[in-house]
Image 1 (cartoon, rainbow, N blue to C red):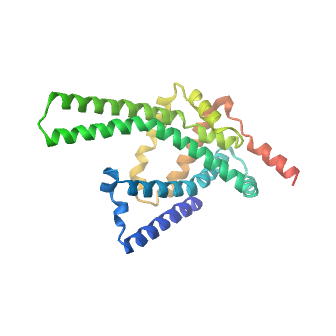
Image 2: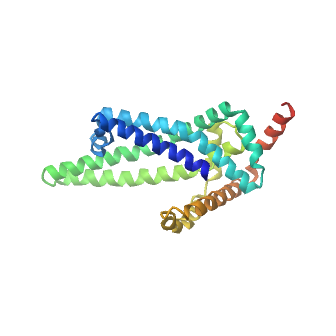
Length: 253
C-alpha cells in the first residue's frame, strides 16, 4: 500500500508542479475542460502527451503490485519476486509497459465508436437547440443516442473479456500479450455476469473508502479477493511460471 501511495503521490506532485508552472506563464487554459470539448488541437496534444508520460511511469509499477498481490493470494514468497524483478528490472518493466500499452490501445479502439456516436448526439442536440425541432434532427439524435448505448455496452463487455489478460501476463511474464488477450476472451466467455456480480459486491464499500482510512484495509482485501477470483476463472490455465524462472535464475547466479 505504501508503495502504491508513493507512486500516486509522485504523479500528483508532478501534476501540481506542472500546473503551477503553467499558471505562472498564463497557460492554465491547457487544463480547461471547455478547450477539450471544443477539440482545440494544442490542448489535446498537451493532454495526450501528459497522459502517456504518466501511463509510462505508472503501468510497470502497478504490474509489479499486481504480481505481489497474486503472491499473497497464492501464499508465495514476496521477497523472491522482488529480488527477481530487481535483477531483471529493465526487461520486466519494458515488457510490462508494452503489454499495458497494447491493452490500452485495444480498449481505446473498442470505445471509439461510442465516442463518435456520442459526439454525433452532441452535434444534433446543438442543431435542435439553435434551430426549430424537426423530425429529421430528432430521428438523427435518437439514432445517435441508441448507437452510443449499444457501442458502450459492447465496449464494457469487451473490457470485461480482457480482465484476465493482465493476470495471465503476471503469471507468465514471457507470454505474448496478444495471446494473453485472446486466452482471456475465450476464458471469460459466458462469465461476464459472474464477473459483474463479484464487482458489485464491493460497490457497497465505496462510501467507506471515501473516508481514506478504511481504504487501507478495504483495498488490499479487494485485491487479494480479486486475485483469488481470477485464479478460479483461469481454472487449469492457472499455471504460475515465475517460481520456475526464479529457480533457474538463482541456479545460474
